[in-house]
Image (cartoon, rainbow, N blue to C red; front, top):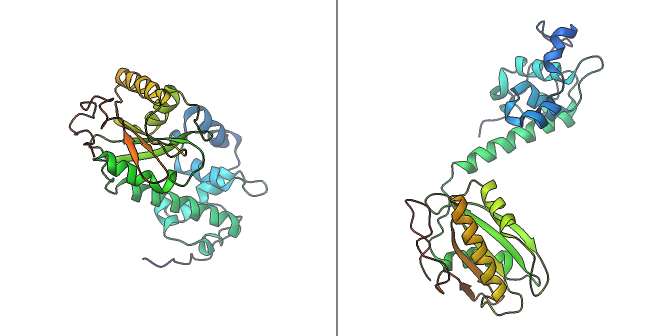
Length: 259
């Protein structure tokens, strides 16, 4: 790991490119508002950094402080090479704001690192049950989870969409498919637990499965399985039971096999 570098001492003045001219400042007004109205992806580096900082100096807008930071340290790449103590030496930052910058850059690094990792494949109902046993097995109430799959049955994400009592939880097909679409899923698997100890699907479970399968077919996000887990590790798969058509899988990927 590259060691953190301490920045050189800086002057107490912003770069000459920074100005208090109202017409020049107009371009920097309201990064938070623009993020909400136009989308966070529409902002430049200086505006994003300004949102992280929150406030500027007395008489100096935060957007000018963020622009000065990027100019001084040669952009985001330069900031990422510095630790919070080095960043805190910049006029007007302090350690608290420097930590915010370091934390946001670290979150971005981790997000990128995880996005390029190979995703664990979901190949069988047994692999689904094994994955969710630690999360759902010990619970004394029902939870419904959506496992989003990519085009090769790799796991894109897992989201809890409902929580209830001992004998059920309320959730709609819309809630389930919204979660899958949020993960840009090519297909999905439903998972929930039966704290009562019987993993057999109830009539309500079957009805929900049919509703999600029908809606998923319409929008092109097929339901490939619905696994129900009991506290003792036993499970039921509606695919294994023949209640879901085995052909419902992303193009180029086989559905999870039975067992």
